[in-house]
Image (cartoon, rainbow, N blue to C red):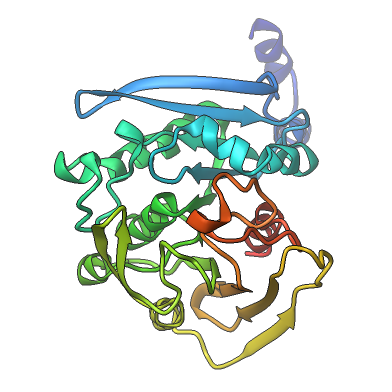
Length: 323
């Protein structure tokens, strides 16, 4: 401090200006220190008097600037560890390759309060504030990991997928894009959906999903209702309207690289939407209540077939990266 003051006092006006510009240049070239150690980091904090848990995966080569965060929401009756197993740790591998951070929040009592009149979920009965919890996870990531607030994404399957729709409806200003696997917009969510900002949406659904009907209707699990949902096409049309997309559709078959999984997939993409948003759909013909490229976590008689032609995690990251 004293040395700098002495130098400034002995500079003429011209040199003082040059000295000031030099400081600005030096500061502009300074990058924030990458002092966040790679690997898993588990965080616990109270929200609404409940102790909540989230695990983050910090990649080996974390981006120094414009850091992205993908939050991955597990399905019903599962934990955050289940999501990493289901996806075969594919998001973590993608994070190592691309320098983004992955977060795995955990629903209370293994469920998310996704806004459906769900007769099974204790989180619904107890009116758990999962939206507020996810907001807190996002704020923590921005403060602790210097995540770019404009690069927040959420992906989920089944109950976790329904939760992504609720987040898009209620905190769209904090989320740039969502991806839902084995989920469509529920009628209860539709009634209360009042997104105040556009958000990009990707859906990956199987046409032979025995739990979440592709053509819409009531979801019945273990002879109990889990609410009624829109058809996949109706869900896409809703988000096309929300994002004011124009009729500019691109359609492309997904390469049928595995001839033994008995599935075929098509990719539909709407790119001409408000604020640069996109709406995408991958339809898995003959696919079940599964994560393409992931584990067959239950038998085919219960959840249907898992597509092996592509990895859902890779398609989701490709979608998010292109926003």
